Image 1 (cartoon, each protein chain N blue to C red):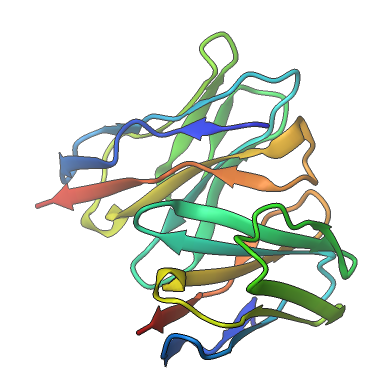
Image 2 (cartoon, rainbow over the protein chains, first blue to last red):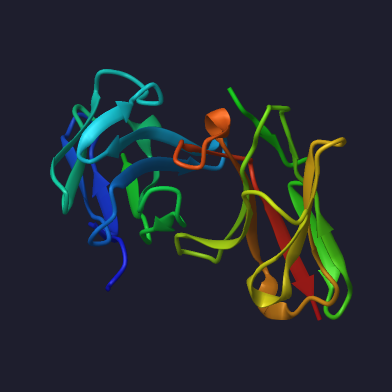
Length: 112
Length: 115
């Protein structure tokens, strides 16, 4: 398996623009997580899904952020409108049940 | 909710010296603990985990950690580090004590191995 695949790896955009980050989890995994990493706040859990259903979105910063998982092999994290303080590395991770959590290589977002 | 504290933001150490990275967690009836490593510009990779059983857990790359319930600690150790061990290390706890629950990460410790 190719592991957790995220795209884009790098995104530079201007304030106010819509940003969509994509994730393909490892096949067969039933949990999917979105994390955000910044120097100031470290790794923050934004939202996670189990069997495509959002379980806990308490970490989503505000209404500008939304996440979907239309099927077992695809998830998106959308920011609309984006702001400079959203600049961070966004990680997607997946696992099967209580097993090891596998991370993607991250999407580095810069909002100017 | 569970929380994890990594007191050391950075640990400098010379090559071939031993190292200990500290991690303390908030108390719970049952707890699952993890250590992850992040190399530059990469995602996190599991080093080792404690779910139950022996309190001494061995992981990849020669690392080990000891679960200490009385001190609510899960410190990571390696007897002899290499330059290639330079990375950010994260301690994590499973929120709610269940293995299928979300992971809460500490703020990370940068291990800087010097020649």
